[in-house]
Structures are given as C-alpha cells and as structure tokens.
Image (tube, rainbow, N blue to C red; front, side, top):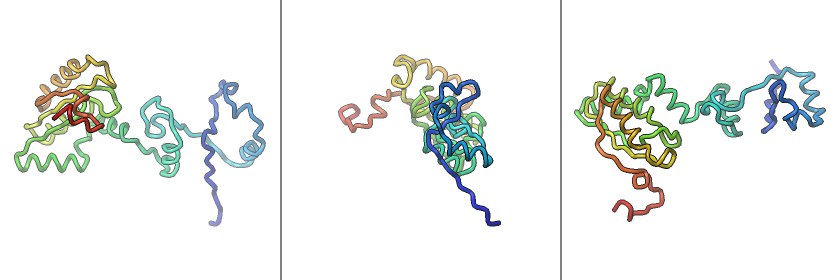
Length: 199
C-alpha cells in the first residue's frame, strides 16, 4: 500500500458548536483552502479539553497535551487525572513502586509514612489520594501507617485545616493509619530555602 497520509495540525483552529458559529472568528473568516480540503477529503473533529485529552473535567487544553494525545493515538492522562483515576478505581496500590514499598514494609516489619498536603486544593495533592493510599495500605496487610500532614491554607481556605484533618481521621478510623505530625505548608513546603523558618 503506497498511500500517503498527512496529519496537519493547526493550533488554535477551533470548530464551533452548532448554534455558536457567530462567536467564532475562524467560522467568520474567508478560508477557501481549508474549505476545499473539507469538500474533498474525509475529516472529523476531536475534543481538545478536559478528560478527552487527559485533563481534569472542564480544564481547557493546550498545544502540548493536544499534540501528545494526537501522537499517541489515545487519551494520555496527565498526572493529576491519572492519580484521580487510580484513587477512584481503588487500584493505586497496584502501581509497582507502591506495591513494592508495601511488600517491603510488610515483609520486614517496617512502618509506612505518608507525607504531604491534606486538602482538596488539587494543585499539589488531593485528600482523596491520601485516603486511597491508606485504603491500599490496609489492603496490603499493613498496620503501622503514619501520616505527616501539611495543612494547606493557600489553595484552600486558611482555616480549613481542622476540617480536612477531621475528615481524614474518620477515614483512618475505618481503614488504617494515624496522624503522627501536623505542620503548615508555609514551613513544610518552603521552596525558597528559608532556613530561618525551620531551623
């Protein structure tokens, strides 16, 4: 078979939904060449935002994720969406690095420590990820699980920490683990090497 195919990507070339044509500059423009391609060759449309390109629901796409998904020929889940999906499906503990760490801890009688933000900010973490990790640790037969919680107050309300810790404690009571330490992200997530904060 000697037929050639061209994948032509026009970044930003959006196709409006039916009834929204008047809001589209491209639809209003004179585009005879592209119109001629449409009249002669097969064509289709793709969603370019949200879950269709591996982003959270409602998040607009960009050229990087668009090109990644086109090149792969499938949905390539971005890290946050991928972790959300694993947490929701209850399969996060099957990820090889976690499964290996859990197996090592169980076989050697070692504790497991989870360290990170406890909030639903969704920028650096999500409380549902931590809950899923605790559930996975329980399913792996672990009992010595310690949470070192960073309260948020930046991506969430500054006074929301107690509510998230209470929510986490309810989950720990039903699964496994205990809150071992609590600190604020101002200290725990300092990225400017401000040693005076924590020395």
